[in-house]
Length: 88
Length: 148
Image (cartoon, rainbow over all chains, first blue to last red; front, side, top):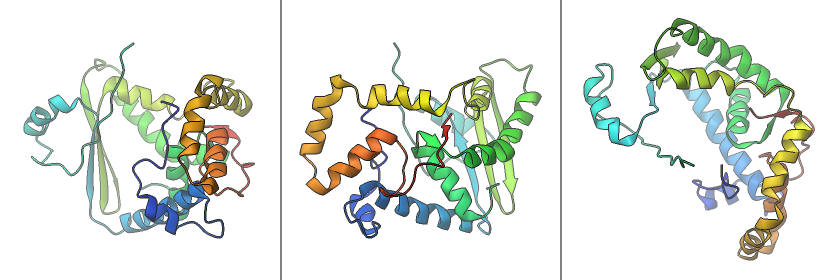
């Protein structure tokens, strides 16, 4: 992982700042409280939500074929998370 | 899905994802709930080729998670729940600081801090130094285990 990787990346800074407590400049404290609230809501909702998650770990190039041929998967998706792997 | 109550599950997810060090209770929770599930799958697929894509559906209440991975990735998952043999939190912290506070990165760090409001800089350096996603004033003492 690069040393520039930051947990704040990918989260709206306004949301983070509205979740700080007494210490208004505590960026990472704000992120902690924001994430904690979101995750508690998510975990609570999971108990009653009828949801089916499918996680794949595949090359994005292979995704259309995989979705087409795997009979358990629908022909649609909600999110694609792309990672780059550096070959050294 | 498997960790109760929701607050504990949330803390487990948050620190597993974002913190360089975790509490021993978080690692214990993961090894008690998630690890046996992965071990069970790995036992069943032991004789499959490494590049075979295999899937397993985990169900809890009305909710399910289907994980589709190559066999080599299933096996790798096991190591993500194991602290490398003999690695102490001090050693892990030293390795981390060697990278995060490297003299070669001083310019990069100071350019980042320069662009921030003055009040944010302490928090930025605190996280860069200890790698634990917690409020600034919260104790880091319970974080006594390297995040595998």
